[in-house]
Amino acid sequence: QVQLVESGGGSAQAGGSPRLSCAASGRTFSKFTMGWFRQAPGKEREFVAAIRWDSGNTYYEDSVKGRFTISRDGPQNTFYLQMNSLKPEDTAVYYCAAVFDIDTLYQTTNWYEYDYWGQGTQVTVSS
Image (cartoon, rainbow, N blue to C red):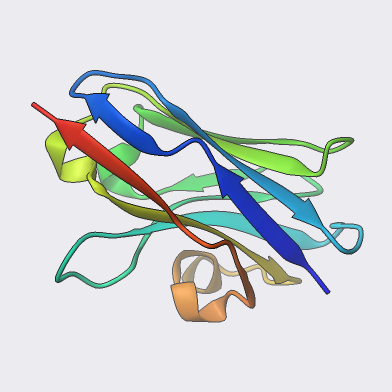
């Protein structure tokens, strides 16, 4: 059974650069896609970034391009979301997620395609 455990959330100032981590366990992750999603109060869960475990190819939501970076550490079975130049509108609960063997952009960016989820971590950005 795949388990995802997040860490690294909390409060940050606008312009800050926290990093979220997601430790994955339960199997090997070849052919998996790992993603980060977020949900602000009263809003739908939205795609933030994703990475193909094997190739390292990355995908980003437009509002975070150039500010956030997703990466993975294969031997540690951990992936990360480095968040730079934070804005108050980045405030949300951030979730890491994983799914086996998808390849379309549509699948990659839609939360309901993902089968495994972390517990969520709050990121609050103050101006």
